[in-house]
Image 1 (cartoon, one colour):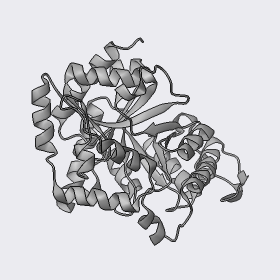
Image 2: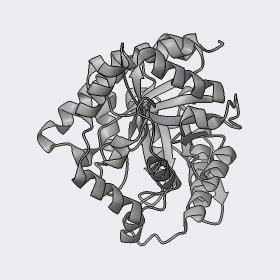
Image 3: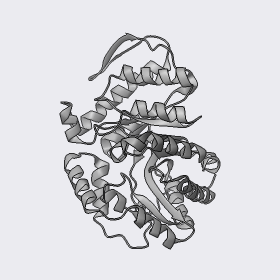
Length: 341
């Protein structure tokens, strides 16, 4: 998956399993296994979640780094949890101890109950304005060995210096949710990669290279040589589950996330049986993204259309096995073969 995708400027990330869905006695081994499968498949990095129900993203990232040689944790960072200086210090410390680059997934918080428990009642769009300042302070601290001063509406620092300084080649990449207008504005202002939960490719109405800024999507992939086999695997892995559906409905009530609403609205539409765009895992609270299901060629066609639209970063759902990563690798090899270099 690494070489042809990288040659087309694509970055492929996988995702850690949600710690809310893992058992304590197997969580550490599962995390290390998935990190190694991702690295062996040539992925750029791996997304590490954060919210009130998850394990600490920084400690999880340290496990990933110690279990791999080059894989970059894509650390979800929530401004309500720590001061921007602490984030910058974490990044500089990882660089100093391991010589590894991180990516940051800057999140504004989607679950209102999580934020209310922390006494953060900031409205949705304001949280993104705050996130811009927060990320700017982090970036300023990491870009220079000199003292940094910054005064904004939400954050102020004076003559603050990062020690140890970050080597220039280890400056973290930054991603921001682009599913809302406020999120997209923040991504543009920060020159970050705007990550979306995509619509079916057909709904982009033949658009080509329409992304105005560096853009990415989160998807899952289940592909085999034949459609029927892929669908059999998909339905066995993600059976419909009433408890999961109720959990999904509850999450919708406490979320003000634009992507959560958008995917839920798409899920109300009856998709044709042969449509590779599949939302059952999302609707049953087993995945936080849409899936593409079908034969290698069918799914590769869909991925190639996303690339044509302008998406260059793909964050895949947590892999089920190293074999599943190999199947996904076939999809991306065929997808990039359909795209102009």
